[in-house]
Amino acid sequence: MKQAEWKALIADDEPAARRGVRQLLAAFPEFVVAGECRNGAEVLAVLDVSAPDVVFLDIQMPGIDGFEVIRRRTVERMPEVVFLTAFDQFAIRAFEAEALDYLVKPVSEARFAATMKRLLKRLRSTGRSTDDERIVVTTSRGAAVLNINDIDWIEAAGNYVQLWIGPRSYFLRESLNILEERVQTHGFIRAHRRALVRLDGVRELTRNHAGALVAVLGSGVRIPISRRRSAAFTAALRQLDKG
Image 1 (tube, rainbow, N blue to C red):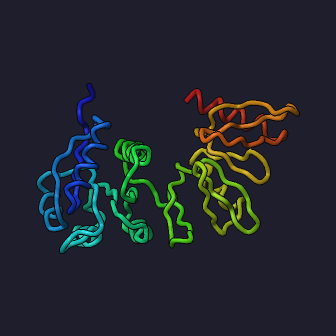
Image 2: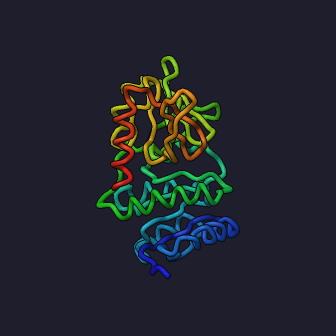
């Protein structure tokens, strides 16, 4: 059994919500729950005592809310922060507060696992990730902050690009060429003139009835690879497998 390497603090004024996070964390033996808080004042008091590596922080708490905790403590002195909220209108403020992630209750096991994967990667690295790991997009409900490593593929859509995460898509007013420069370091590569694919999201390579190469993503989406890019795409995928 793995020994816990990291300490987590859970802050939420609802006992059921705290219990839910604790239950989700049970699947990650690398973490031990160092404490639970009911409000922002308790969080500020406990941070120095327990020195957690991450705090799962509810935004709307009585008295001092989650954002005020960060303001008083300062971003530089905070552990990694994963915001919890029943609403999604605070995404931009969460991004500005340099939170690792923003979870809307109720949180599914799959969504929580994706956050934990990013958290482990962050904690095991030498420092915090840069802002370009996130993309802010406008939605019908306001704004959303997308993690680049969650995006499966990107396609050109007129003056926009369409960012696909599983079956959901988001539009960003930016050219594919400009965005390509930004996401290349995150393992994206051209599949054809109008599409970028994240290599570690490719489940397999196959061929269609015409013999052309097709990348099958984990979501089941099939992305054709142009003939002029097939050699480079295949080589990059093999290199990833070796790594």
